[in-house]
Image 1: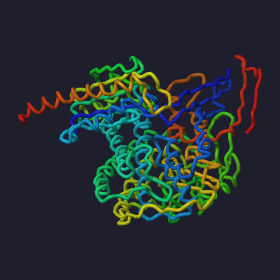
Image 2 (image 1 turned 90 degrees about the vertical axis):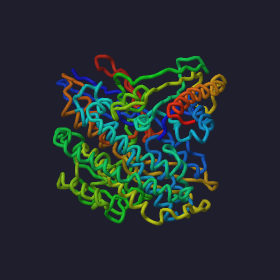
Image 3 (image 1 turned 30 degrees about the horizontal axis):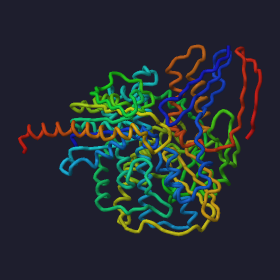
Length: 163
Length: 475
C-alpha cells in the first residue's frame, strides 16, 4: 500500500494547466526504487470520486495544480481540509477539498495530512508547451515535494527503529 | 399569462444543454424542448486526415466513452482494410467495450442519478448530490466508486490508460494480453459481481417509491433498436440490428449496420444542435425509437450469463410487452453492469484471449467503411469514405445519444405536463423534468458533430410577446 499519494491535476494540452503533469513526471524519475512502493503518483485531467479509494489508503496526500490566483511561476504550498458543504451539482470538477470530504463521507477516514501545491500560470490556451516562468518553477515544486516526503520518511524510519 | 420556463443548465449529465417549457394562459405546459447548446464538429474536421488516425482521433470526442468511439472507428477502418481481425483481438476489443459499459453505467447511476434516487426528487438541491449520498448511504457511494474503478482498471490494464487509450487500432489491437494481466483482471471479478448484485437488490427494494416517476418518465410506446448477436443476445461488440415494438414484436431484424441508410434517416430541428434520427419506414416523427440499456434488454430474447439472466427475466416481467418507462433505464443499467462483468469473466477464461496474434495488416482495399458497436448509451455507428490515398473525404457519426433525441423531447413534455404547473413552480417539479433526461444518460459531447446542416430560426420577440422580426435558415 502506498503511504504517500501525489495527485497532479490539469490538462497537458492547455498550456500552463499541464504543469502538474510535468511535476508528476519529474517526481516519478526522482524516487529511488526503495521508495517506489511507498509513493503513488497519479496525473489526472480532473479530480473524480474514484480517487477517494486511493486517498483513504494514504497517510499523506499532496495535490498539485495550476492556479490563476498566483503570479506566473509562483508556488504556494498549503495544508487543506475537507470542504464543509458542497453545491457541486455537476460532480465533474471536484476540488481537492471536496474530494477529501467525499473520502471522509464514503469511508469515514482521511489522510493524516493533505496539502495543495499551487503553481501560478499565465497561459491556458491550447498548447502542449508551458510558459517560461512556469517551466522554470517545476524544479522548485519538485524539490519542495521531495523535501516534504523525505522528512516524513525519515521520521517514519526513526520511529520504527529501522536503520 | 403564458410563460416560458428555462432550465439552464441541465445538471448532472455529460455536456451542456437547456430545457425550455412553454405554458399557456392557465399555466399548463404546452411544449417542451431539449436544447443541446454545444457544437463539436468532429465529422467535419477529420476530413483530410489518414483513415488509420481515425480511432485515436475519434476517441477524443469524449472523456467518458472514448472506448466506444475507438471500437466503432476501428471497425470502420477494418472495413476499409477489408480484413477479418484475429480471434484474440476481437475478444480483447469485446472485453474493453464491456469494461467501458461498466464504468460509464456506474458513473451515470451512482454519480449522476443516485442523489435523486436515494434522497428524493424534492430533496434540497444543496443536499441532492454525491455529498448528500455520502451522508445518507455511504455504502452506496462506495459501491459507485468500486464499480467505476473496476471498469476503468480493466481498460487501463488492457489498453494502457483509462482515457483515450490508443490500443485499439485498424486490424485489431496493438499488444497481446499477458497471463499476468489476465489474472489481475480475473482477481477483481468476484468483488465487482457482489457489488453489482448488492446494488441491484437495493434498487429493486426501492422501486415502489418511484411509482409516480415510473409512470410519467418518458413512458410511452416506441420502437426499440439495438445490436443482437446469435439472434437472441444483446450484441455489444457485434451483431445485426433489430427493431422491436412496444408490445415486444420484432419489426425488423437481421439488418446489416453497414446498410443503415436504408432504415435510418436523420433530420434537424431549429432549436438544437443534436440531430433527430428516426426509423425510415415509419417517417418522422412516427419512427421514434429508443436505444441503450432499456432497448437492449427489450430486444433480446435472453441475456446469456447466469446472474444477469435471472435479473433479465425479472426485469422483463415488469410489463407484458416491452418495458416502456424510461425510468427503467436505471434498472437496465444495473442489469447490464452485472452482465458485462460476467461476460468479461467468460471472455478472459477463453484460451484464445492470450494468443499472440492480435493484428491483421493490409493496405487500403475499400473506399468506404462502416463500424457499429453498442456504446453504453446505445448503438454507435461510424461511417467513413476515403480517397485513393486513404484520406478521409467524408464522415458520418450516428451517436447513441442522438437516437434517443426524439424520445427525450417527448419524454420531457410528458413529465412536464404532469409535474409542472406554471403558476406554482417549485424546484422539485423542474428537477423531475431534468431527471427524465438523466434516465437516458445522454452524452452531449458525443452527439453534436454535423456542420453546415443546422437550420436556424431566430425570432425577435417584444416583452408583450409580439413577434417583431424573424430570420430563418433552412437545412
